[in-house]
Structures are given as C-alpha cells and as structure tokens.
Length: 250
Image: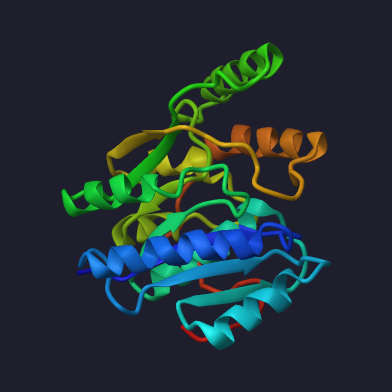
C-alpha cells in the first residue's frame, strides 16, 4: 500500500473549492478504504498567490479534516510552478502524486483507472481526453496545430493530455533533475525514461469560476513548450518548497 498525494494547483478558486474538496476527499477516502492508498495520504492544495479566500478556505479545511493540506506560494508564479511545487512536496514524502486542476473539468473517477495502472507497475499515467466534441471547430483545429508545432520543436507531447496525471516517486525523482521555474511539465514527462501509459476520460465543463488561462498565458506556455525540448537534466535534484511561503502539516 502506497501513500498518495492528490496535488491541486489553485488560483482564486473560492467558488469551486468546496465542491472540489468534497469530490477529491471522497475519492481519496475510497482509495484508502479499498486498500489502494495508505491512511496518511493527502489532498494537497497549492495556492498560487490567490487574492480571494482560497488560502483561508484551505487552512480551515485542514484544521477540520487532516486529509486536506496545503502549500501557499510567496506570490503568483503560474500554474506550472505551483504544480511543480506540489509534486516536489509529494516526492519529499515518497508519495504517488496525482495532479488535477481545481475546476473539476477532469474526471475525478478516472483516478481509479490511474491507480489500477500504478498497481500494475506504471510509473506515469496520463489522463487523455476521449474526444473534443464539445469544443468549437476553431478550438479543435488550433489544439491539434499546437501539438504538431510543439512536436516540431522537440517536445514529444501526448495528444489531448494536459496536467491530469499520476507519477510514482521514481518518476518524480527524474523530474526533480529539471530545474527552473514555470517548467512545461507535459513536455518533460515523456523524457524521464519511463513509459507513459494513458487512461481516457470525458472532460466536463468548469464547475464554477472562470478559466485562469488568458491568451497571454497560453502563448507563454507555448514558448515554454518550445524550450522544454532542449532542456537537460541536472546532477543534483531541485529542493522542495522553493517558493513556499507557508506549508501546512502533512
């Protein structure tokens, strides 16, 4: 039985956070009850410098239910940096990480299939959208073009996969050798030396709140993607809590 950390980057998510906590807390407890996850597993929220009540709500949930814990970054540093900070915290605890966004568009029940793949020896399991039928023609076309462009620049991306994935401690060790802020994680995971297995799921509409990915942030992510194909691992792993202002107990 392994320790699991469900890692959830958050930026101004007060509208959706109560439902996110309910669903992810229930899912983690079901994994514990089935003997998949150990009793010291946690849902780890990483607050990326929110200006609303997100961190206040995380602290309150932790005080009442220890299954929820959190990290507060020193300022808004971006989704990928917040996610990396959570993954490195999971690595420090030798936990299996499952990263998922707070907006509940990714299917929480697909975590069961990821955990099953982990039990069969997987080190990395990526959630892949079953279809893009709910997208507009423009969005479908630009998304496919984006993946082709990233591959042309050396980033071996998995089609229709974002940041909903499972990573075992060994894969997190390999990821820790890549240093820097705002890493393009979906471009690095295929370079860690482990098979990337996939599970498919239907993506839902955002439960509440607004998307935090503006056009400017999307373009910045694309530039990071181009650079990721040229990154080289270091010999010394990065330290956890590089940008953490406050961390709650695990």
